[in-house]
Length: 188
Image (cartoon, rainbow, N blue to C red; front, side, top):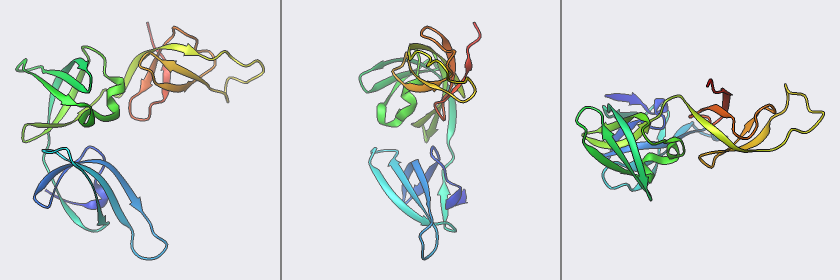
C-alpha cells in the first residue's frame, strides 16, 4: 500500500528499488533553505545491509504488509537470539542486529511479538513495560526534595536509568521499554 514518506516510523517495512527494507531510524530534516525531507536509516530484510535514503515529505513509498506472531524468547547465545513460535512450537533464531536495542529487555520465557515480511523475521515488539530488579543504587543525598530529584541506578540487565530517591538496591521496578524510563515500584 502506498503511504506518504513522512508517516514512516522505525519498525515499518517498505519496498524501495525492488528490495524489502525495515526502517531502523527516521528523521525529519528542515534545512534553512529549500524543502523539508525525511532521512531514513534502513536495513535490507534479506541481506542485512544498512543504507540511508532521503525522501521529500510529499513522496509516496510502498509500505509492505507485515505479519505479527506470538512467540516466546528462549535464550541468547552470543549474538543469536532463539525464539519459539507459540502455535507451531518451531524454534528459530534472529541475530542481534535484527533484534536491536530491544535485546536489553528480553528475559527467558518472555512472550513477545515478531514482525515478519514474507515469513522472514524483521523485528520484535516488546510489552510496553517490564519488571526489573535494581542491583545498584546511589545513596540519597540529604536535603534533596523527593519531587525534583532522581538518582542513577543500575538494573539487573546492565542498563542505567534514573529512579526516585526512595528506590534502593533489591527493589523491583517497572520500566517503560520504549523510552527506558522508570514507571513505578513493582507490585509484589
